[in-house]
Length: 245
Length: 112
Image (cartoon, rainbow over all chains, first blue to last red; front, side):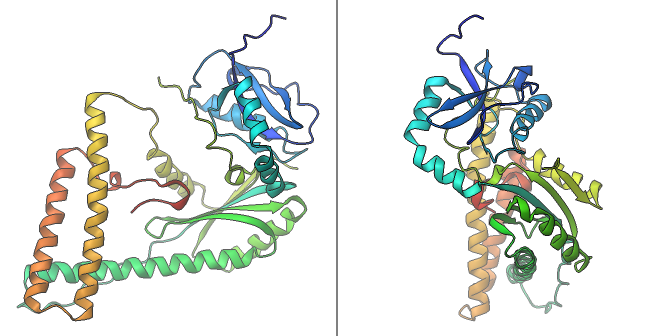
């Protein structure tokens, strides 16, 4: 087998701990074989990349996710962002210099998976305009209209926050951490990522299934288990190298 | 651990909403004079829109607080109305829609 050039880029999928091997059948970006690179007691799933950029394609996105997913049964990985290309030397230096922080990250997600909840609501109706006195000027009418719009925004925000609080209470005790985005002006009003310990996943699903019955006005999408994409906190360490076509 | 499951009774609705989200992400970066000019206009107009909304809120608060005379309310309303119209004009000029005037601030959400 020919030796790899020292500056050849490695496509990095995720970091892992306590893993000795990877599934030899799994293929990565551009159908490349995936291997486990051991650095300082931590592992990184990588594949050789002949190119300096990664085209953003459906196949590449699925390949990236499939490699990370392939180890989820055995360990909880810390996923890199799509498009992370580095040299082996950069990777080694990164891991050696950040080892304590990486170990903290691993401890935060260990034995957990990410569950996702998305909620769609019917946007609350806007308030009907007040009857304006005939003598009122154009500027005053404009401000009165803005006042009604702001009141509507505040009402929507309060209702959206109520949904977020309700969801939080529903899964209390079953999550280790959460990332919640509330968008009162959008139909997709809430997106939540919950970090759930593996043994608690069935109970988490059950709780949500029951809770959903109590809120027929809301539409739910529950998905998972996923690798802890929202909790990895290593995605900004390297610049991603997207292809521009 | 089982494969990921997706549970919903409203598939089409979620597909539509998630497509709206992905449509706001750039699929590629065009570095040409026209797109750079539009990108700069988008950034500047977003910041102006953000400040305009703050001014509107402040004006409404002062109106509700009762510390403005009817003449002052009228004058303030007219000024803000003109500012809104001017911004609308600039958006058209640079080919920008209302939803373009926003910034994704990552984990803390969107600016507006």
